[in-house]
Image (cartoon, rainbow, N blue to C red; front, side, top):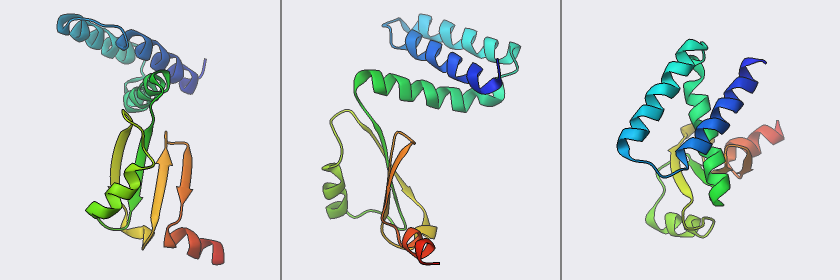
Length: 127
């Protein structure tokens, strides 16, 4: 089994375990054991990827999404209100400033779907 498949398998197992109700002591034990497994299998370098995959699986199971609004500058209050119309209750919403976009916005859903109306995107299509 290659490292990418292992990462997906670990993420699925982690998502399944953490979605159960447990005490703080049980959560700590699960976390400690998970870290030990990653170290033992030399997957500690993939920890961030595994956690992101697990988060995506949990959100998907709950019918929620992870949405990133990427803009060239800070989003104003009026813009934020408008962008909230794209979200549902319980969605995880992140804002990211990327000056390379020049203007416009890039909306990324679950790290896979993207709607890009940035100036950078338009310019790259021209040239």
